[in-house]
Length: 162
Image (cartoon, rainbow, N blue to C red; front, side, top):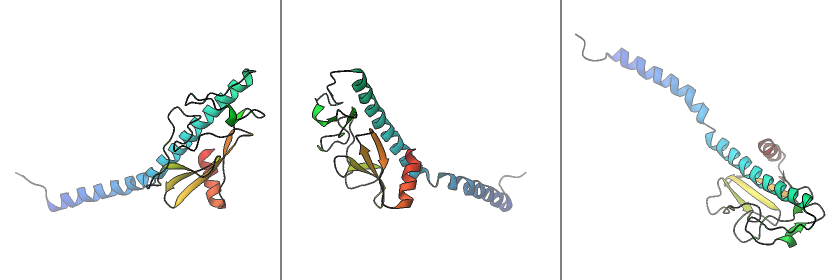
């Protein structure tokens, strides 16, 4: 009567587990990068949808007065020629506060998976402290576009967003 496993059986099980792990680990290798890319795309899409909503209201309303997501009058920050906001926040530490009901907190020390404002229309999205995409908002078109000096980063940014 056999009461335990032999050494050969145990080695065989360890080899099978090793083979399964060798297939599974590469699948999860870039999981964090994919999650950050999805987060960036989701955030930019939400901002873009809000901008498009504002533009739609401008089109149908002859006496348009822009009341932002923060319930403040931001008519002075609106481009009445194009029908898009000329800026998206008040540089008050909350990013996109004019267009998002829940504005984003800027990067703190972590600089990973977060936005940072460069100027009134330029933002950086940090994947990690050494890798970021620079996005520029164009009020004449109401769109975000990648604005990176490195050609490879520019292509990667465009691939992520579009």
